[in-house]
Length: 198
Image (cartoon, rainbow, N blue to C red; front, side):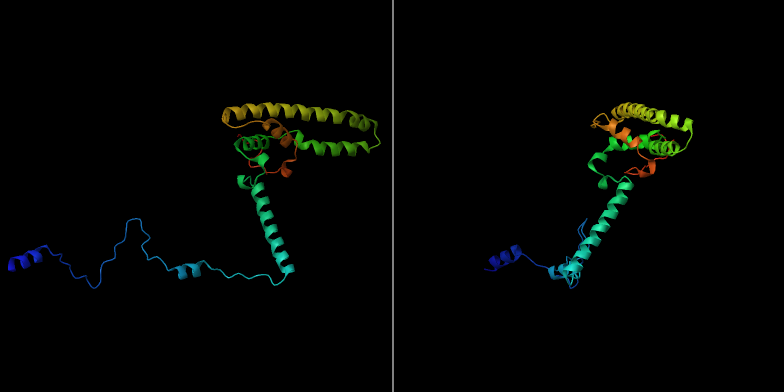
């Protein structure tokens, strides 16, 4: 009996008394703080919402929010931010085309100024001015057309070399049309200065 009791006491699990202040074990990569209760987490997420008092106030808030979003989109588009660009302007190939055109002065960008000057000359009662008005517009348009063809061919070649895996369809016309726009009115806005290589 004594031997059996001794045998049981040998194989019985002995539990140590837990210390009054156990050390905090922090798992590696853990947050190092206790998980907040659900009520506390919901309270932290909750923000005061002030509902509009009437329909007029609600419409006013919607219009203000839309105006803010449009202003942000215009600013992003002017800076060439991909997030705000139209589908036709997105991608590295289109960016290359814009930078290529914006990095040089083109005849097309002065086309409107030239046309205004021709109209002004046509008002003068001078025979030479009348003759100039007759021949200048076709010559100016021909120069712009030839310049557009040259820019189109060059940008197609450059895009194929730099981005062989990208779609270059329509990039030539895209660059030629941008070359005809007045520089400060181009959208997206120019990101390179005239004379800067791309």
